[in-house]
Amino acid sequence: MRRILLVDDELHVLHALQRILRQQLQGKGVKCELFTEPQKALERCAEGIAFDVVISDYRMPEINGVDFLKTVKLMQPDAVRLMLSASSDVQAVINAVNEAEVFRYILKPWQTDDLENTIRLSLAHRDKMLEERRLADQARVQQGDMTPQELEAKRLEEQEPGITKVNWGPDGSVIL
Image (spheres, rainbow, N blue to C red):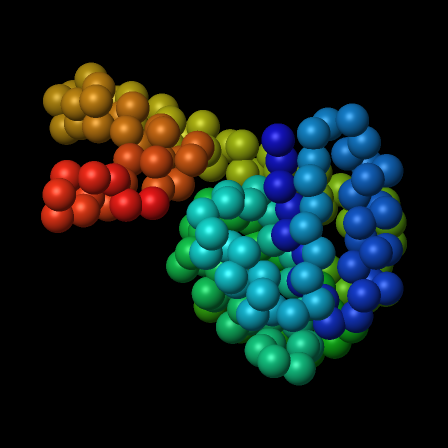
């Protein structure tokens, strides 16, 4: 299942994005999560749920989009990050690309076709990035730099973050 995180302080913008994504990705197992508060979105990212794409507004009251996406990058480096803004401030675009490694910058109001194409490109970019990593890991196993067990543990951890880490109690019990 694909997961897309949408963050904007304006609820009507989130609903418009969600409508477009539903139309474009209908029947393709996509789940969109909407947040008007960036801090709550970061809390959701910290829960270990991997997002394929994160779309954030640039101007928000609590935190700007660049800082938000920089934090997302640290928490979920594999998520493709997109910036959405009504501002055509060149410095904001430069900061977004350089600091948060934003894949695309989308101007409001957007053209539906352009937005759909950007989402398609973002998902393809993520798939390509993950496939390249998988092939590199296979090469590491063949070269003896990684064991098959380490490769499997890495795969499991990518699918279900935290699954390979167990917190043990002093009496040998598992702490959830």
